[in-house]
Length: 375
Image (cartoon, rainbow, N blue to C red; front, side):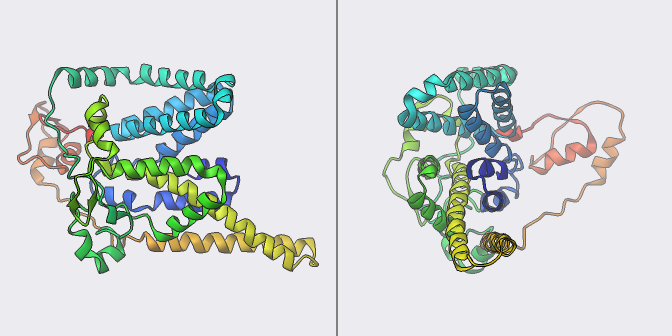
């Protein structure tokens, strides 16, 4: 996230806070409770970075890296693959509206097509069988999107993963559908205000505002939920889930929240940059008569203090202390099985997420297994 923000802002202090926001957002901590593939979200901003570079620069290296980071996102989660494609579509449409002639003349669409082609070649051994099964067979579906939709309140009230949510807001978040891991969408009021300020003050961030708004609406699912109650007002996700091929893989719409957090991290970075410039300008006007050395030290101090305060306040607002952990006790039977030279399959009854961990102990094949990328 830091590299993406630094590329856009050209301000390392602002990029640092943007990285803090994305890394310590509630989504990250909430899914650490069990969805390990979803906490591997570091490839998303890197894909965004090289998508932008592919737009701006005629470089084969950028094409390859765009494809690489799309592959890495896909290997972590099919959700992230679809989200990256949605981000790409939004980006292309936004650029076409603003710079129609330019994106054709500078070869951006050609370079993007090459990146997607490379991605398809690399992922085809996995995608082709999966898509064939999807087309030829009926899936019962593990997740009902009407249940796993983000509650509107969850963006403005800390959930059960939050230090403050557990302490003060349990009467509110306990009514939300889904569970704590999936409904930890809290934006944070510091980040929210910085983002609003950026949208008002800086036209450069409008793409991220548009993308963030789209991802916010998608996270709400097929019908809006407020306070745990569903309202029969169809939202865009309803149409996408029903009519867009393979979009039904995203049965948990509230996971779109990670893309909203990506956009808001960038927006907050723009907000910090603009505020920094105002503060520094005021400071320089007041000490204009001072020496150059004094101005440099003063400017550096203000940047460090301002950045540090925002970083600390953000971490404080996103606090998830104490963090819930589980002590895993390994049965002696599994350790005994590991010493058995025979090769056979194992069925765990009941099958639980810890089954995969136990397989790393006994080193035998599992008869039943859930691919992490499909969770």
